[in-house]
Amino acid sequence: MATSHTEPLLTPRTTLGRHAERGTHERDTINQILDEGFVCHVGFVSDGQPYVITTGYARVRDQLYIHGSAASRMIRHLEKGIQMCVTVTLLDGLVLARAAFSHSMNYRSVVVLGKASLVEDPEEKMAALEAITENIVPGRWAEARWPTEQELKATSVLKLPLTEASAKIRTGGPKDKEEDLNFPVWAGVLPLSLVPGNPVEHEASAVHEVPAYVARYSRSRGGK
Ligand SMILES: Cc1cc2nc3c(=O)[nH]c(=O)nc-3n(C[C@H](O)[C@H](O)[C@H](O)COP(=O)(O)OP(=O)(O)OC[C@H]3O[C@@H](n4cnc5c(N)ncnc54)[C@H](O)[C@@H]3O)c2cc1C
Image 1: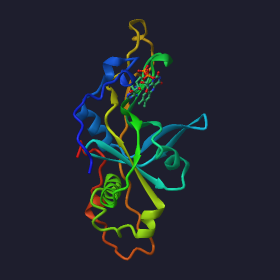
Image 2: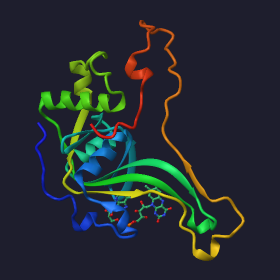
Image 3: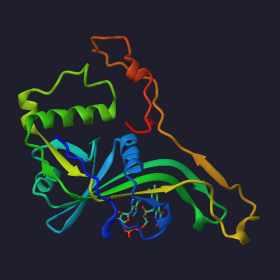
Image 4: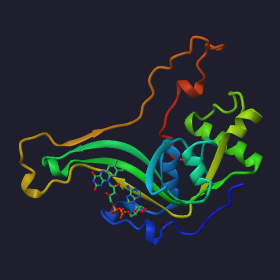
């Protein structure tokens, strides 16, 4: 299945410009952010028009898998192996500075550049669909009905090798200028995290017991 890449993820295209000190090209850090996230934004150009499409994904070793309807613009274009960009963002807090100019956010984000290819091998395709399902709710694949031949035909899976990527991380409080520190306004950080609400059972659900993987759902998995 996925091959293992050991080459550095830092390339001229993934060299950070502004606030380069917040950047890292360490594979473990990048993997942890990718594994905690479950929504990515896929950027590509089609007929001269840039599109940034939101979708789910999963990382398996050094590959990022995305799936979609074989008829979608995103899949039809990306399967040709055109240049693409995938970003994943985890929002950790709102940073309220004294100066409006210095307001910011705490975050962990990843940018992956490269070209995707269609997953043709049926075993790899099924494993990728499992990983995408598990990246949404770990534990779900084993209990859910697996895809039929017809569903598999209608769905394409693409893989993007993690060979060119960067992470950027902002932590900490506001960074006001010295002369603004006494400005009479509250300053600090409002931490944000993704927390699940109470599970809502479907009225036709055949099972009433909430599975443990739903009852104890958490996004902060700290990597796989
Ligand atoms: C939630 C959030 C809010 C932000 N708010 C602002 C804002 O208000 N204003 C602002 O100027 N910037 C903001 N940023 C930072 C922004 O994403 C860019 O990093 C920055 O604007 C430009 O950096 P650069 O010049 O290095 O980018 P570029 O020169 O365009 O990027 C060069 C390379 O650096 C890497 N890179 C750049 N940005 C990121 C990133 N965020 N994560 C991972 N790799 C990256 C990529 O590999 C990219 O190809 C925000 C980021 C996040 C995640």
